[in-house]
Image (cartoon, rainbow, N blue to C red; front, side, top):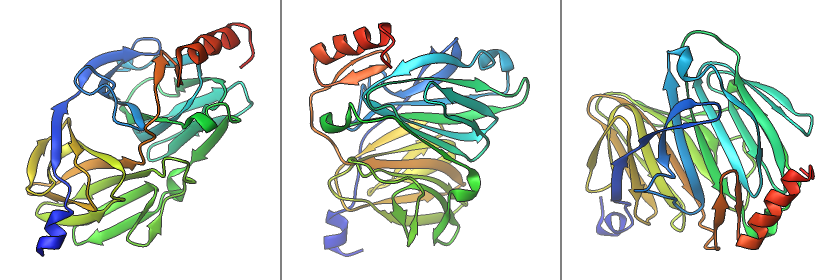
Length: 283
C-alpha cells in the first residue's frame, strides 16, 4: 500500500456495542445508533438490530404508528413481516428482502410478523431527509431478494448491494439527497478486501455474525459491535475466522435536527405541527 493510499484509509474513530431496548408492541431489540453513547451519525438517526427465535420477543410486532421527516430501511435476514400503510401500500418482507420507506410529510404504517415460530432477524435503519424533502410525498419501495445484486470484490468476499455501487454492481434503491451506500458483506476465513467509499460520507460498520477487522490500522470487532469510521476514500475489511457485517455510508446533511418519537424535523415548531397534523388526521 502506497503512502498516498494509506493517507486516505478510514480508521475506526469509535467502537461500541448496542443496548437492549424495545419498540412497537414490546418487541425486544438492540439499539445500536440512537443510544446514549451514539445518539446519531448524520444522516443516520437510528439503527436497531432485532433477532430472536422466541416468538414472545417479536410476535406483537409493530402496530399502526406514524412517521414524518425521514426514511426507514428494514432489511430482513430471517423471518416474514407484513407491511401495510394508509397510502394503500402492502408488501411481505421475507428473508433477504428490503423495505425502503420515505415517510416524507406523513405516513401511518404497521409491520406485523407473519409467523408464530422460528427465527426473526434483521435491521431497521432511520435515514434523515433534508429540510427541502421533509414534506415530500410518501414513497414505498418493496425490494424482494431477487432484486438485490451480489458483488464479489475479492476472493472469499461477497456483498449484497442494497444501495450505492460496488465493483460495478449497483443496488436497486434509487439514491436520494444523502446518496446512501448500504451493503451486507460475508467474509470467509482469511479474506480481506478494500472497499471504496465517498470521501465526504459518514460511515459505519456493524458486525452481526462471527468477527471482523475494520480499518487501517485494523481494529478487531466482535459480533454485536459497531465501528464509526473516520473520513477517507476507502476502508479495509478482513476476517480471520469468517464473519458478516453491514457497511453503511451517507452524505451528512449538516442541518438542525428536532426529533421526538416518530417525527424528525428541523425546528421545534415543525415538530409541534407534526403532532397537530397527526392528531387531526392529516397524515
